[in-house]
Length: 97
Image (cartoon, rainbow, N blue to C red; front, side, top):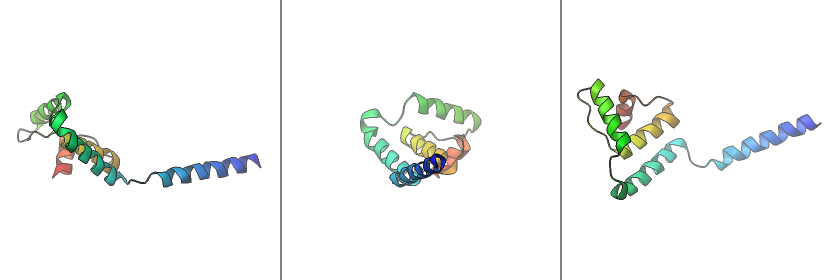
């Protein structure tokens, strides 16, 4: 009896968790990008991470155009949550196009 009750409780917890997650992955990425763009005036469009990433991609692709911090945020969110892909230069470029 206790095993059945435990199973029912676990199922209820999973159901509540799924219902509580109101935002879809794409909506979450859109919201994250908007927040990044709002803070771009104070934080700036670039930081050390973006600079290193741009340098790294330029080494492997001479035609690489620098991306901003918010573009990298957008690409990393979409690649991680939606496409389940890594942050390679080609994948980031595909997301941003």
